Image (cartoon, rainbow, N blue to C red; front, side, top):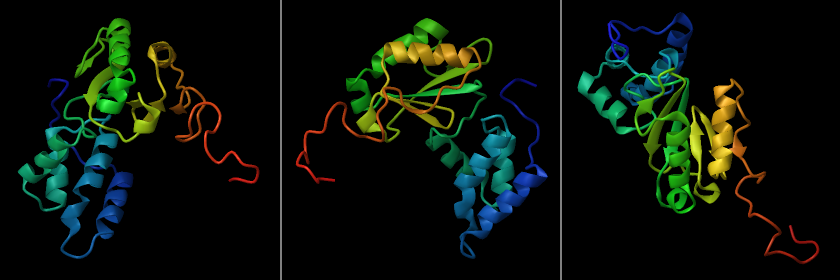
Length: 197
């Protein structure tokens, strides 16, 4: 059996209970709307990818034709249709990130790891995927690593993140330059009067 094939899939007892709770949130006759959270649950159980068997299982659970589940799973980049590395690097390549250096981040990943879009390192540790907007435009450029956002990156910071991950250390997520939220760098330029909030 190849690495991207799986003969069967079923939810663990714990995840089956979670799936039932998810389905119960939807009104009678609308349970099919649970397809996205159930695919996410299946992917998390299955080592961060969706096999055909897992998609069939979700389709049968929701009484959906297989093609309807494939359509959802193949449309959204949040679903992985083949195995990915322990650290899934999702590099935003949309305009704000690109203008602020996403190309430099891509080059660091290629130089340090030897991988490009859709490739996984030989040791199975890293997969890199170029994705569209992840919604952190104010803190561009950014990379989503597994479930976490790493923002305000540059080539040196990205190289350091990769080194830490390779050594088993998971760096704190968020701004890598110390910003809170999307506040501007440096001093405020508005609301400078005393008592302003």
